[in-house]
Image 1 (spheres, rainbow, N blue to C red):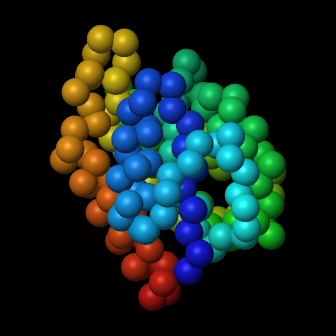
Image 2 (cartoon, rainbow, N blue to C red):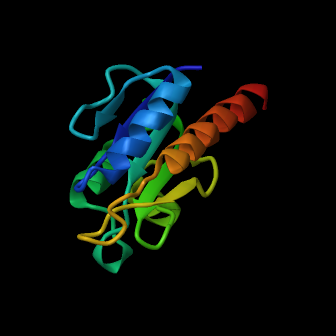
Length: 142
């Protein structure tokens, strides 16, 4: 199974989870500024719901440009003060409805100004890595 990890992070919280996810599945996490070099079976996408529960424009544009020829399935992970999923926002941003979002994703806390500065914690990073490993195992066996 060919896997990639892309993320957008303003404060660094999502980057921490992206690095944990990527390490768990044996790839390097890259920002959404880096286009996919080759087609993948599974793309882990990380971000955060910002004002009005919207994705940052960089992440929305990255998702909007994806095609089924590039990506078959997406697994999402997110950081926010409220532990909100970016499943719905990701679904809305995708232009190609053949791309499957595999589940609601992993949700961890993230820093918001001076709030939650210790997040994501090492335990949350370990949980995100576990989510990634279990997702790959489930999809590989399914």
